Image (cartoon, rainbow, N blue to C red; front, side):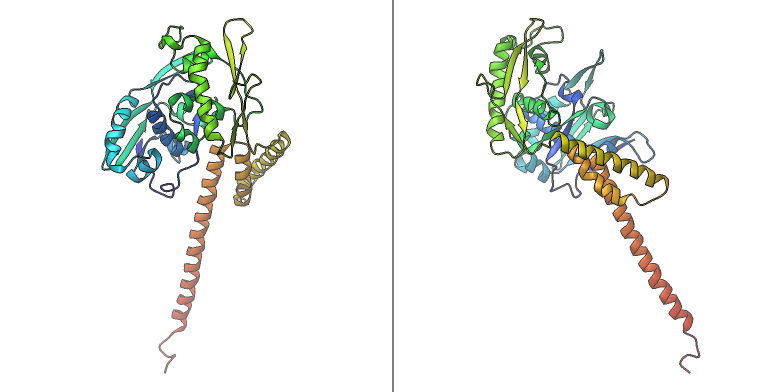
Length: 356
């Protein structure tokens, strides 16, 4: 079933500070301009797992609409210029394909079904077959929580792409090396079979110097004023990365150097995980016995956020909101019934002889 989601509720003037991008997208071959990447980020910022499933588990096909005020806020474009500014990026974005390789299998699929603009409203329809690509909980590949203000401020697609990799490791204890050859494929420098697309960047050292290094310098400039991330310098003086030869002697590997500020210690993460596990078990018992799960949900939500489980935390927050709204309505109805009972009592007591 197809349906449209208007982002006109309490989110309208309160864009989230991050968007979730699955590893299938981060590690998939998808070459976009900076504007197109910002358009996908807008979509992912408001996409939820529940958008794809109805209350009975039926499959849904969501479409997302954004008004001119939201678009101006997101892109920094005056409303009267939105039509022309978004026309060409949208025309090319709707035909973009994402290529993924998972467990020895590959696929090529168009990312979106339709983009349209009219009466100041931008409407984006994701490919209905890509729930596993868009929604973290529908995929086993994991996800990255990408900070929107930094992502939108980065002016080049290369800088945005590198920033995605940094965010990919936000909750990991260590950032691993990735082969430069693999990055060249992901950045659209060469094809799967190693044929050049951009011949001038086929040299791994040239690719690092002209693509990765400038991107990390841009990110570092922004990070100086950001409370979450710090770009480190290697022992050889390289900003944000270090390079080592591959053990097979066939090329190089690169490791991004980043420290996430205010990161919890392993002990604190362990404590949060234990607490979250206990709360989840308690909630399961309460659900079986029709107990009150609200107090448990209220405690569980922040623990899930500590653990980086943003999508699950959002689901908990929505459930909390739903339960509170339901109980408020029940309280109002109960009050109305009590008042009606008292009125009925007064009516019953009144009889024709009362005032004789």
